[in-house]
Structures are given as C-alpha cells and as structure tokens.
Length: 417
Image 1 (cartoon, one colour):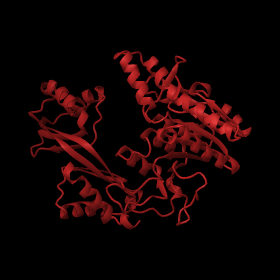
Image 2 (cartoon, rainbow, N blue to C red; image 1 turned 90 degrees about the horizontal axis):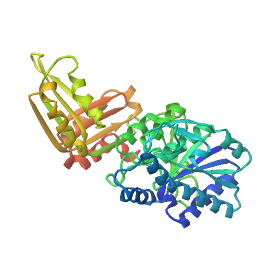
Image 3 (tube, one colour; image 1 turned 180 degrees about the vertical axis):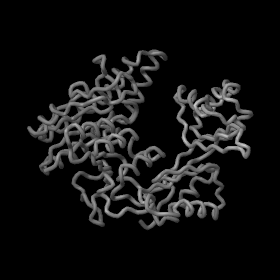
Image 4 (spheres, rainbow, N blue to C red; image 1 turned 60 degrees about the vertical axis):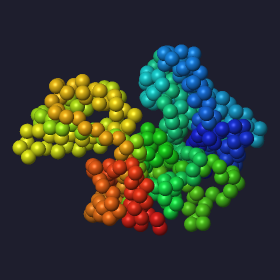
C-alpha cells in the first residue's frame, strides 16, 4: 500500500463526463488499497472566463478580490469530483486551500507557498477518506484567499505530497509522459521512463510545458517523486507498456537512475529577442547598471555574453529576453544611456534558443563540440552560446529552429532511445 497524491489539470476535468473519468482513475487506486489525496484545477477555460469577468467589472481592481473570484473555479471542480466519487461508493470530501490550511505569502495573484500543515489530511487518509483539494489556492497572512499564479495547481499537488509524506505525486495531463523533444517536430521522439529533477527543471524552464517550473523546483527540494501520465487512458487500461515499464515518466532523484544517457532531451523556446550594448565602458558596476533596472521592471533576462575589447577599456554586452519585453527593455536602457555609458544599442528579434540537456554530460567530454559540428554541417549559424554542467544552449535564427532540434535529436542517438 502506498500514499499517493493525484493531480488533474483543466483538460482532464473539462466537463462532468471527464470528471467521472477522473473519479474512475481515483477509484482504481483506492480499490488497489492505496491512500489517495486528489488535487484539481478549474475546468478548462473556467479561469480565463473568471479573469475576463473581473477585468470587465473594472480594469483596475483589488488583487484580493481578484483571488476570491478566480479561485472559485477550483472550488467548483473539487466539489463535483467529490460528488462523483461518492456516487461510485468512494468516501470523499472536498477541501479548499484555507481549510487545510495551505499558507502563502501576501503576493495576491502570484503567491508563494510559505507552509502547509498536512496533519488534517493525513488523518483523513488514515481513515480511508479521499480529500479532494482545490489546487492553485491558499490563504495569505491577511487570512484571505490567495492564488499561486497560472499553473499553480501543479505546485499545490507537490506541496500536498510533501506535507502528507506521499510515496508519489501523479500528475495526470493530456500527454502520456515527458519526451526527448517535442513529438510534433520530431516524430521519432521517445517517451522517457525516468528523468532526474535537474533535467526536468531545465526542460520546464526551456519550454517543455508538461510541468510548471515552480512545481519541479518544489519536488526537487522536498524529494517528491513525480509521475507524469495521461488522464485520457481508460481507467482500466493496462498500466504498463510493451517494455514492461509504467506508461508515463517518473521524475526522481538522480540516484534512482542507474545508468543515464549522456543527453536526455532537446528543448527549445521561440520568441527570443537579442539586445547588444556596444562599447560599454568596462568598469565595476556596469553590469548592475544594465540588469538592475531590467529586473526592477520584472523583465527576465536569459543568456548573457560579454566580450572585452582588445585594449580592455570597453566591452560589448549581449543578452536575450522574451520578444514581448523587447520594446520595454530598449526604452529602459535608452533612458539610462548616459548613466550606463554605452555608445550604441543593437537589437534583433526572431531568435530561438535550442538546448541540449542531460546529467550524463557531467562525466562526458566533447558533447558541446558534437552539437556545434552537427549544426555547422546543416548550415545553422549560432549567435550566442551558454553552458552549464548539464545544459548547452545556442541562440539561432527562428527559421532554423526545427532543423536544429531534429539535427541534435538525431546526433545524440535519441531517435532510437
């Protein structure tokens, strides 16, 4: 017998029929003797509608009232699922974030979890009751409903799993696991049986939409094993594939992966813009002068490359950021040109970042050279490069994005993983 937290996203609970399907998945685990808690998102599209109504009521509104409104979507889902489970003979009860309580900081609309007391949930689990918990929400220091930001239900589920000391957190979604890359670009992409927390964190931050970045961070910190699987499989379908492995992907500690591949996956993000500040005076504090104001404006800077001139007096600073923030960043930097001390600002849009990810890279040399050679052979020009222990990222023209992904997926042998 295991203790499992099951999380279902918006598409999995999009209507009452799908909620009944979710209930059947939950009943399967209960019938198998497991202690089960469930975390749910709002029905697909419900949160968007609630946000639209809020903005229609007033373009400028109190963030606390915004949270009270948008959190109601998950409240509806949790109640409906509890009713569906009761109809199947499963003892279930719905819970809102404040009833647990899941406590957050005061940042209404984008709160972070401060603490969660799992004792009440554990007592329910021990009594063989299924708590059905509204995800995405908690209670702030002002004792009012708070929300965790879009995609926050994944974070709720991992937090609950950590609080009740669950053996596993199952994330049910509209895909059947984590793949070596986007199968829409590379039909030969393989579903991964296991992936390390660090690798999944890189994949999530680089565009893989299977899990939210914050939820992966929390899982890694609290060592919560996460299993990504499809909610659209029939509840009574075989739980293992032809290879004998469970149908899904286990996100776990590196120690659980006996022999990792050198490269686990290829991720990419489009809509990147590149800004270069030319001939900046090379003096202490210049980087802070550039990136401090951008941070204050909540502009997320990604790749940063600095080239010092031959005489050591000036430097060129190149960095990337989302295209949606490009115009704001240019305005901020131009307003501080005299203070920063750059001679010219050049910018280009229509860039794409492609990344090679794998914990096996720590112990293997030549991985980067392999990528550069393969891209050069296909005529893909690299604008910028950044590396870490388990990642190599290159900035290229968006027009070459799919070619680069397919090339790298093939060169590292992931087509036949």
